[in-house]
Amino acid sequence: MTSSQQRAELHRQIWQIANEVRGSVDGWDFKQYVLGTLFYRFISENFASYIEGGDESVNYATLPDSVITDDIKDDAIKTKGYFIYPSQLFATIAKDAHRNENLNTDLAAIFKAIEGSANGYPSEPDIKGLFADFDTTSNLPL
Image (cartoon, rainbow, N blue to C red; front, side):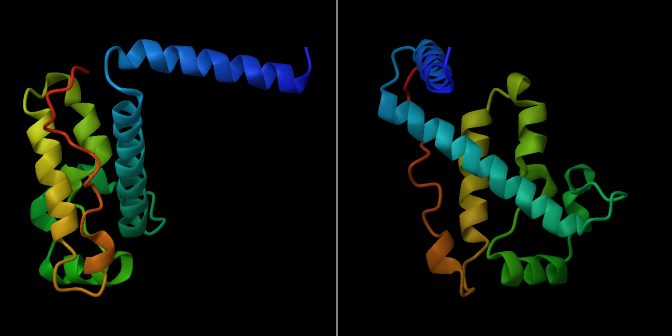
């Protein structure tokens, strides 16, 4: 089998898996959920890496939110353009997602908080509406 045939077969299998997973959810809506989740994970990991600064003894996700000072938050927003508390990180939320009956509303609040963290900063126009296409409160069957 040539590499292009292997690639085509892999593409077909991935598409089939995606169709099975999404069930009756429209393909566009499903894509928005997947891309939104991947984006949330990316900015969470990126933010945690920034805070940890390469220090392997620091695990931002395990810190209590209470250790975050206004100066830390202000500096992070000025540098990154947004802020995410340890309790709001993708890794933190994903760890208990299967037991969280309020996951949808918790995610909506987290996305609102991330977007709101830039209010009053130069990054505000870039961050505002960042998660607008990720409707966590939809009644679509997932």
